[in-house]
Length: 80
Image 1 (tube, rainbow, N blue to C red):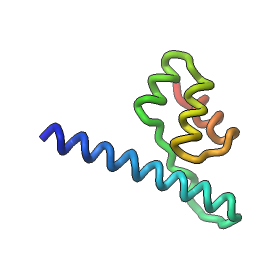
Image 2 (cartoon, rainbow, N blue to C red; image 1 turned 45 degrees about the vertical axis):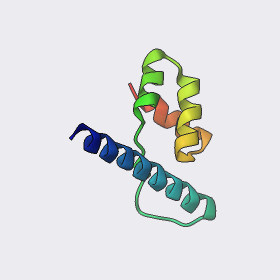
Image 3 (cartoon, one colour; image 1 turned 90 degrees about the vertical axis):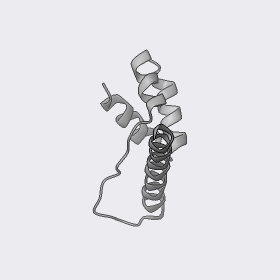
């Protein structure tokens, strides 16, 4: 059962990443949508923020989501 739960969590994280990347592509191509990005921080990023490694968290978030520097900074600063 634990393996199934872990696999589901991995799939959810991959889906979140893909959705964020699609949002980035839409924005880059000038395609508008009525939805705001539905970003979620991975457990690793949350841990970085809690340790005070905000710059590393921003870098990791951008890598995972394709977010702009401004969007990533704003998102990471919103995590407390």
